[in-house]
Image (cartoon, rainbow, N blue to C red):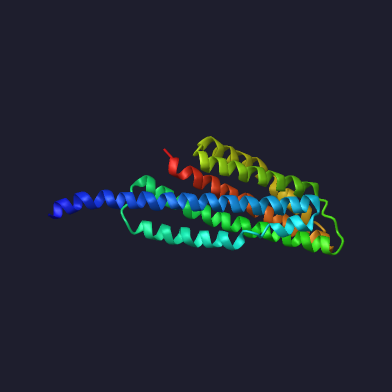
Length: 216
């Protein structure tokens, strides 16, 4: 009797875990979509100097945080059961990616707030370096999404290589921006630079998280 119960219980448990992992994946895809929306509008709001674009950045913030809490709860529940190595890797990946996406949206909202502050006092954002970094972050987040959706290791690795290239000489560039900073423009654009830097760090975490379930 116990033997039969064990034989039938295990497949049911595995099936339940697979369903939960499928829901996790769908929630992560939605978080990725909302994060791209936030970064896209925040960076374009700065680049174009448009308040209406910047204000759109925070549109999905509440939903994204609800998804993150749901992912955390589902991950904790899954870890209490019996998972194989690949399932455990995915759960760990889900936690890493969801935390990085939450931070990414927060930083995108910070960029938008500082952009609105600049425009509110009649200052047109004009840092070509920040515009280019915003475009780069936007492009790389899209590549992260492709890597996750298509489960393509090479896309995630391409993001990591791009981040490594960007990080070369980063300290010199940032110290150069900060040198002699004063006034509304410099303070706000320094804060925007900091937020973009954190977004790039989050993209690294997302890429590593995307690679985790497929590590050899």
